[in-house]
Image 1: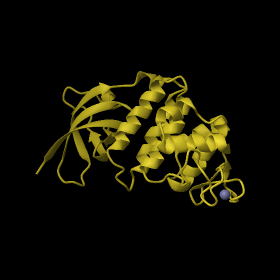
Image 2 (image 1 turned 90 degrees about the horizontal axis):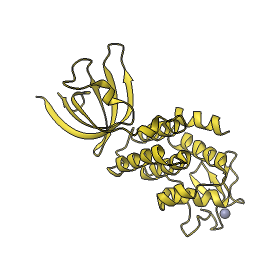
Image 3 (image 1 turned 90 degrees about the vertical axis):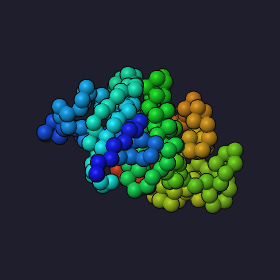
Image 4 (image 1 turned 120 degrees about the vertical axis):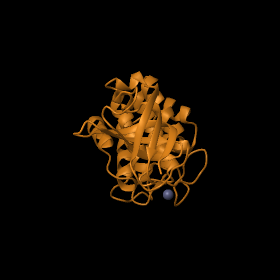
Length: 245
Ligand SMILES: [Zn+2]
């Protein structure tokens, strides 16, 4: 029995096959899924509509729940033109790759799509796309339940003693004071960096974007180290770290 579905989705990943078919990873409100668009078999459609980061409405069918869905119609709702800018593209790629990695094992919930979409819009349109990517990357990590732990308060405090946090300890996923941050892989982020990080995780995203950490290289190092430990190796993040190092 064939089952048809219609969903709004964001294209997170696109893999052209030698046959001319295209496999896409889509993020919808109900989660992440994969589908194939057969070459020449998309009525009235065009495989270009399934470009990376496009906001689409798709009709798909699958024979059983575990089958790769087959796309039968694609409507383009919006493409964020600003993402093609060379200074924006690597950051958009990071948000898409991170969202993909965070949804491998877990269903992260319907807020993920809204946050990813909002992040991509910010990267496309804001003058400092790096600040947007940094803030939204941490927020996605928090949505997946993987945020670093800190004592709450107006400023993040050391998880051990309650003093001002200045260190991100990736090994056990905590924010700590200088005295209690003794792991070899700890990243010194400073008070300002710890505060920016805490805002990105659970505060106002607007504030996180407009008041980014002063030392950007250090902030990217903190994100890279933490993601490698708690999420996995991301190609986009490695490329960005090399640029900002
Ligand atoms: Zn401490």
